[in-house]
Image (cartoon, rainbow, N blue to C red; front, side):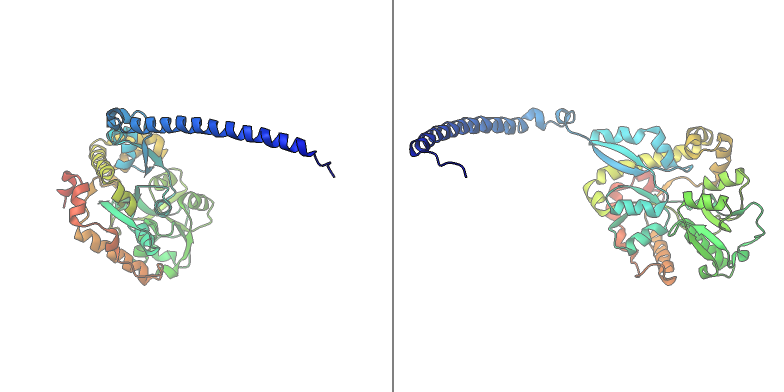
Length: 364
């Protein structure tokens, strides 16, 4: 046990402590005054005309990021990324662009719901499944069908000759994708139901492996997977979506992003439409530009160019009605748990008029 200090030593220590305390209080007072002055100067600087000037603040304020899905198909969206015009248009608004890659539409909308993506490009079905899950999705614009760019593949030496031969067979596709939707339509046209085949849910990269290893009997997929497999003599086209597809793709976002940045969305749609028109009118240049993206030679891409219909289309009552038919189809098949009212995800005509380019609205 430590010895107790003598009384006089305790008082001496107490005297020193009081002196130290007085010194500390004095130092704190000086420091507080200094910090107060710094804080006031900082507030004055923030309120000064120079810092409130957008041109002056743009040099010091970090730009916001708009995250847009990357397209690896022969589309205007892929061209838009390569041309870089969107980045130039958004820079004055304080935005930079991040292009993000996803396996398919459902993964994009999962990312939007998780605030990891701002603008998606999907077929008609992923938004329905997203809405069925309660996601606050907003449809921005639509496109022409381009059904010939999606095909049902079978192995090159498969005995399957028509869709009816698929009964009991393993068919791969991305769940809730255009491949899923067109398979339903193709089977119904052949007098079959979805339950008549073995559905193998696989994202495109995994389905590509399974198909090349003959682990599935057929695969409903889009370009450039179709042409790559045909070119490599791995598969052949059983049927394409040219006569099956009656829907277009959708550009969509979250309700929060739409409400916060309608100006960004408007610029995106304007530049996208320009890229779509350029893509339609310049097949050779597009082929050269997107050869690295699609991993196909330019001459092949020139041939593929005719499989697509180019241009952005406005949202109309007809669009909404068709999307409701898609939603009702999935509900009738028991693949979504609740009946979806797709109108919840659409804007009013007045709201669309504010974000849709005039030349696109003219396509009504």
